[in-house]
Length: 255
Image (tube, rainbow, N blue to C red; front, side):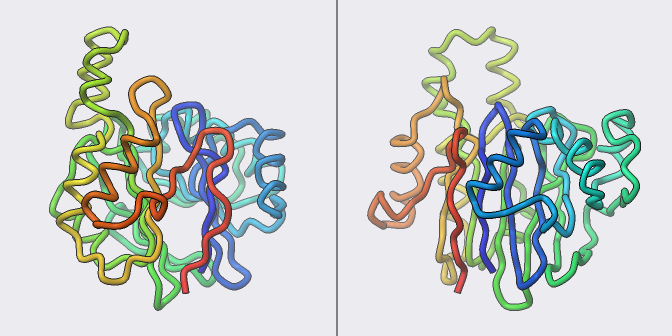
């Protein structure tokens, strides 16, 4: 199994997971041509995609899904709540599949486990990708942890973990108070400290890759996110990768 990111942040998100001849795109918050260019940078074309899985309906996650799916006839999987909240955004997709947020499903060689997360969306989920031996877990766009989230992440071989903001930077920043409360609240985004707390409660015996993702441009820095996560692992700071808005991160192999 290998995985990579087209970009991560409030301006657009997309992640690729590949097993054998199966390649799945998780979310697509970029315009069509931008998506194609970002995929080309990773040596991928849209025709190689086996499917798109959607986490929730916010624009930085679904902005490019429908155009990509329609143009290249790519099947899309999403929750009923996500579809119900934005029916026009997913119109005219010929292969649209509703999923149960607690029920695994397969796309080709990849078994995919959705799980619900606390976020200000209709029926948001995140995903764990499994090739039968190795597990890639993704957790972004969640305001806090739950026992079920930690159960899903436990023992993973690779983890893409949201470090959206530093709480002090958020509170000192120029966001309106209402937005500060939304971002920092239980249905907002994970801060560095909470991400580190989640990490500290997991079985990390299999962990090969740790990626800090969905960093805020205004309210965080890569250095702060890396410091928070590496302190839990007791590893060198350069072992923790950061997914950037501009380039995401290049392919990483899970062995």
